[in-house]
Image (cartoon, rainbow, N blue to C red):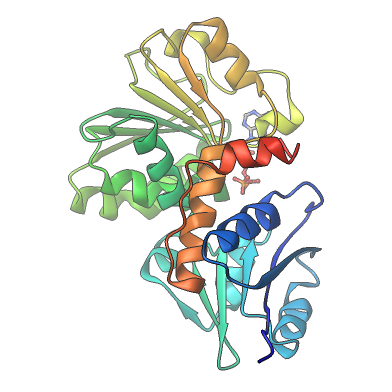
Length: 279
Ligand code: ATR
């Protein structure tokens, strides 16, 4: 009997430092599954053409990362309810020549927060950023029933667009949704502050003011692989600080589940990546 490997890839730009292939291969080992998983540099202009190539080469699935998640949402023939809500796709399953899009970022974030002992039910959450990353996780945050979800962004107009998009969903879930620009956030205590901006890549200043952080605050940065100015600020102010590596692993586990119908064990992945000197 010949064992046939299923093909997967993560696509985006830049893609060189992606940990996704390693994480998926570690998951596959847990179930003795034969897969190969590449990273392929794809930009917005070439996405459509590249998707057709993956289809003709009989790939089974793709992970989609920046800056392609919204474009992937527009190009998939079928979408999960969550993808439709978030207008974002990070997991594509290719079946019968069709692309089925899903998003696992939100569930990845919530599972990681839960594993870290952070309960969002009735919590006051400050979500920083109003781009693709913030919009990909907000539905799952709302579904956790925080008492308040405050959106803040450098460009307040983008928070206003975001508020208009999510208002009904928040109301349906009885969550109070408020917005302000980066300098207009009130100084009341937030239990959890989530940085969903890309500020860490371009600036050495945190997108929020010191006054919002204290030693009881959980500060979570969705970025991984670097200590961002937001994380440095939180450390300086004695808050509890996490980067987004756990979220990356948990969202990958959910993608793996969608493709292989198996739930991988995620607890050891960080130490396995360390052993492989990948982090
Ligand atoms: P992503 O898909 O990573 O969210 P994006 O859609 O380009 O990428 O959004 C980037 C987010 O990071 C935006 O909220 C952006 O703020 P603006 O809407 O004002 O551009 C935020 N951001 C990027 N650099 C920032 C900085 N130096 N300070 C504060 N916010 C920043």
